[in-house]
Length: 142
Image 1 (cartoon, rainbow, N blue to C red):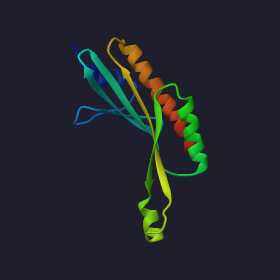
Image 2 (image 1 turned 30 degrees about the vertical axis):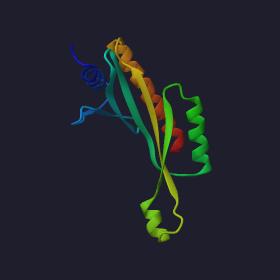
Image 3 (image 1 turned 60 degrees about the vertical axis):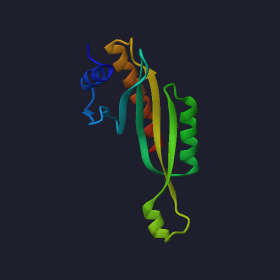
């Protein structure tokens, strides 16, 4: 019987480009986003699928972006939306160490138990999550 990680690779390969990483994780690309999927064993009999989808990167930290991210965080049905703030290296060089502009990367994270789901149910759930993230990306990058 294949492991949950092996099942993920097989069922997603039918519908998405899948890269198997050296550490066992999977990287998939969907509508301008990319995501990492890993199986994490919590205790015997409980394997979680951990999905982290990068929705957008290097967005300027503006009120509009902050408001959109907050709206998506409130309204998402799948997981949580997170923001990673960073200072642009170009901005630091441009400003010679003065206050630099900040940018953000936006991610969607979702963890769920994978055991007991049929291949079709597992694929459908992952595609729903990835599509939700791609729709969020659309509003953040337009």
